[in-house]
Picture (cartoon, one colour):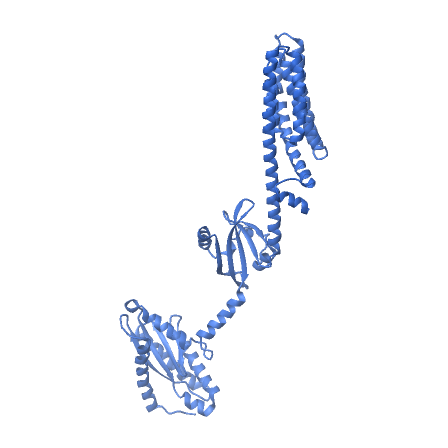
Length: 493
């Protein structure tokens, strides 16, 4: 097998096994061609019959008629015999022997036809036509064809000399027939070489395909090979089938549309591939099933496979990495005690709201300070103080909608941002929060009561200020309420 592969790589069939495989392949190809020629001769025999027995019936010379009819009848019997052989024993007969025998018989028929023509037309057209026909249609091994041409040419020249004693006429036919033989042999040699090179290229392609498939299936990562034209799956290794949980009994999975959420994504990939030839680190989320969602890192590469341009898709599972990233984002953006946004993410949000200047949105900022946290911490410990913060935060959150933003500024201070909400509606919402605090205090058996001071600042687009200015204005408003509360409150512990 190694020597056979080496023979293919060198472009020469020097190895006996490689040469034998090519001969078998070539003779099988020629065997089918003889079938087509045989059908053609059978279909054209009625025309030969008309020529032999109707059109040439008044031509003198019984020998010419007998030989011509015998030649045509022999061709018919050969064709009928081959068709029977082809359909009855196609795989059993030695195809090389049959092909060589038929080529030799065709050449002999051509030579005899032209020798017989000397009795009437004195031309050698039949012989030249057969020579060229054999060269173009049946380019057998050059070594065999050389001996066939040489032997038949010698036979033809001897027969021609016997039929043509004229030196000048014979010399012209000798030159023309020999030239036709040389040209025919050259044509046959060219066709045979092309056939051999085509076979070698196909074998090389087959070997490369085999190696590609083996490496493709051995790769530990999920791999897909899809057609560039219609997105059909050409190859998919076992790892990809398991990763994407595909069932090829479902015809919907014969294409690779499941890789993309929308056709526009594939169009984007195709456009980038046309420009860049490869795409690295394309992150996409795949809803594998109702319960399974995976994040994938895809690499796309344009490759040639079996003379077609395909897209090789390399998949890396980054689901765990995405989960870790989400956890880190949560830790970085959310307050662990209350579950709302932390100071960093809240301040970034305020900076974004102020960054648009005249194009920014109108909003109302509510600065909240939980009352009596220090007293609760001193009397009952920080665990109870944390419970106070969580309970107060949960009560406030229950009254907010998705467009309202709540974040912990630090300690017992919280910020609510009401975007595009009228002040009257915000005031009603805060009154509802205060009522919930009161209801809790009336029913709860916890060692603390809920209470919070607040201050509003109404921001309007076009106002020039920083985040610090915004918080300072709201903080001042909150301290006004805090002062009122301290003057009125009676803490019950």
